[in-house]
Length: 250
Image (tube, rainbow, N blue to C red; front, side, top):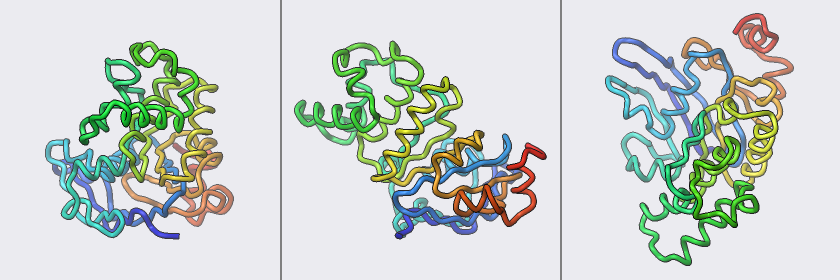
């Protein structure tokens, strides 16, 4: 299986504070990766490095390599192209204060799609992929802010899909949702992996066990180990991983 993203020797600093230490990991195409670990251990910081969201943070310095399809994301790929290719869904749903239709069409319009028929097709395709089309197809002109929390989060997934990404980053996408909405997002993730590489940060270890192919355990800015999810949860190599998974700390 081809590697989609390769991370080598990644260190990240916010001013004098080092947040990530020598991260080395590979992400294959069309698999789901879960990043687990206690709060403040660097999971979300690492995730935001993969589409250069940390560029927006003052005094952030990064050394090491992150390669997407073999290309250095810091030196060989324009940041706008990178963020089109590597989409992101955040912890809290963040729909734009506009119609459902315009939320989905916003990205394609930004990237030059102008024909209404083409936009219509993208909107329907993206909402269908996010398992939301049947629920909203009769109210596309209504405000996205009128949707429930779970629907808003699926809308945000659809908005990411509308610009044809290849990788989806998800930063605790279900932490603000009720159990039923969480289940729908988990089912969505499992369906989407047929076409995308998905990297999800989650505090919910049961969720990681349910939906991911591989799992990485972060602690104090270090990636302690990464392996198949079955191995991480049944026979981790590092005692710190075992202690976290069995609830001895965290």
